[in-house]
Image (cartoon, rainbow, N blue to C red; front, side, top):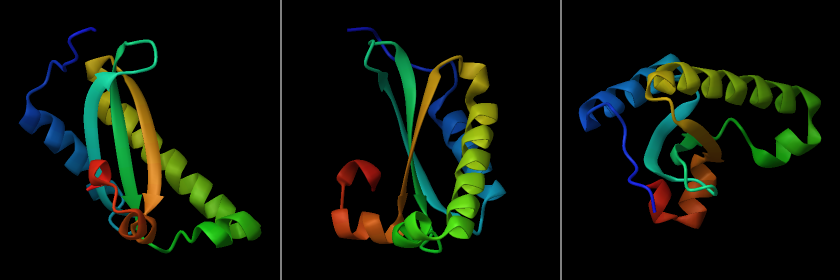
Length: 111
């Protein structure tokens, strides 16, 4: 298994995450991240983004306007993460969940 790390300090990584969250104050509740090997064992960033509940999963499925707003927002967040973490040269995997979903699932990796 490969040693997985970043060229930046833990504080620099936290600052980069905070800068992404600050760009989307009405959308992001918080972001958690980790660095580990992906399915090919290549060092990669894994981001778990918790969104506020304005993004109701049921509405996204049923309503084209909600779906478009959600798509635009997550694409913008992904782009901001890519920009903030590009210097590390690692692959970024970004996953999304609403605060209500996280409250229901209580997944410790997302806390």
